[in-house]
Length: 337
Ligand code: FAD
Ligand code: EPU
Image (cartoon, rainbow, N blue to C red):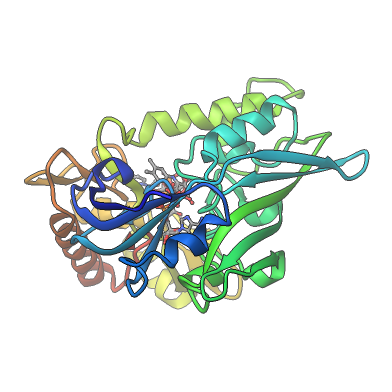
């Protein structure tokens, strides 16, 4: 097992931040974890689990052992006439996995096309887009307990999925390395067109819309508004969309009749953080190499050589603006290290 020393993480995070990791190891089989963690140099060090680095902002050098979850493999088991259980290794690229399922005509993940990152990270924040979250088709996952290397299976309720949230971001933060995730997909898929922007794009496609058309349409919409991390560093939405109470919403709507909103149950309303940030005049602004994307105000970008600290400072200024103008606190979606 190779444990590398003093490794640049630039190519391991989609913001393209150039920081060093003190130690770095790629885990391709679950059995390797114990061997790596018992290594003489790293035994007493803290660790950081890394997937594709597409939801992380490094603000300083990582004086830890970085464990890159690189376990590969896809397998499937037909459950009955309608359902197939598909299991993928944590290190599989998320979008390649989704396209593989769509090509087999296994439905359920197509609305999550083109999200960067790995299968293993998908449960951490219950990734979501265009009317689907992984919780909708999640069956279970297997994870290594970092304290005793035993393997634990987590069922759907045990993951406590919420909007961009799970037990792995809360009570069990840093406790488990996810090794595989299993999804229950449909062998007779029905497209999910509940998201208005997706439905509008497919309005002229007739009644027999395939999941391949859904996947391609989602990918096209995403390419049109989100920056490609290979061209401009970013980690997707920097903040979560805030949820406020109805009284606060009514006050805001009186002043801003054009404020978009989505009902969120129990007298709560979800607002697009992008709109709030845009209204504060941040869209397209740039401070050095740190900026706010020109087409999507919720996406912070690195135009080349911004440091993680510069991007974090920009995010703090944005938070202050939104708070001062709308009395709304934005929570960060990206993991700040
Ligand atoms: P990383 O960034 O490497 O890690 C994220 C977190 O998960 C870290 O806390 C890490 O420690 C932990 N982690 C990673 N792998 C494991 C593992 N195997 N076991 C335990 N912990 C682990 N997200 C959405 O939900 N919806 C979107 O539409 C979306 N669009 C995006 C668009 C762009 C252009 C970009 C750059 C990002 C977007 N994201 C979106 C965010 C990101 O793609 C997802 O959060 C993705 O799941 C992160 O995967 P990753 O492998 O890169 O995780
Ligand atoms: N808007 C603006 N200005 C902008 C951009 C958007 O005012 O610059 C307004 C528009 O009114 C638009 C609304 O904001 O209708 C929502 O914008 P969009 O449809 O782009 O979605 P979002 O709420 O910004 C969320 C997710 C994305 C996900 C898309 C599609 C969060 C934090 N973000 O973005 O997820 O891909 O919906 O489902 O929930 C991510 O998590 O990294 C991510 C990219």
